[in-house]
Length: 160
Image 1 (tube, rainbow, N blue to C red):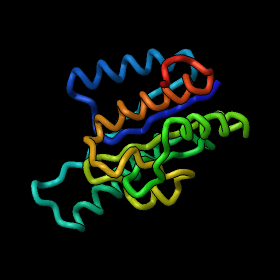
Image 2 (cartoon, one colour):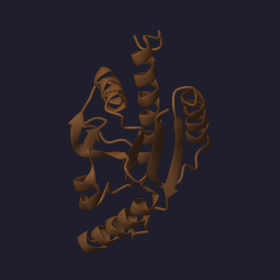
Image 3 (cartoon, one colour):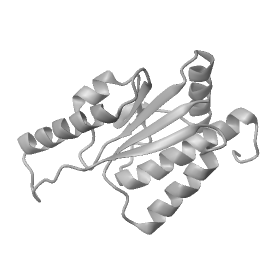
């Protein structure tokens, strides 16, 4: 069975996000083993300078590194990543399975994104959209798309 870990910078606080996350984790439990590791977002001043942002991203990257699964394929979500529709994501999940890849790590950064070292180590850089979304919403959107990918692969009616 495929093992998926989402490594997310920031903790979900709003009930509607935590409820949505729980719902998709429940739905996904029939298709894969999945867990979420939350990394605290580095605190920055109201108007941070470039050096402060870089230092924060570096600290977050170090924390992310401790949560990565050894030998897992890494998919980093970032604005400059590749756009995939749901069918392509489903195909990518199938491809990993056919190649014997049994562990995946999806990484979602915080408000300022991800440190370049995380992006450089990623097997895939994935963009959800050229639009900007709150990173908490990106987590829910990713969970939904992973679920949709499994439903597409099984030929289910969920995807239309």
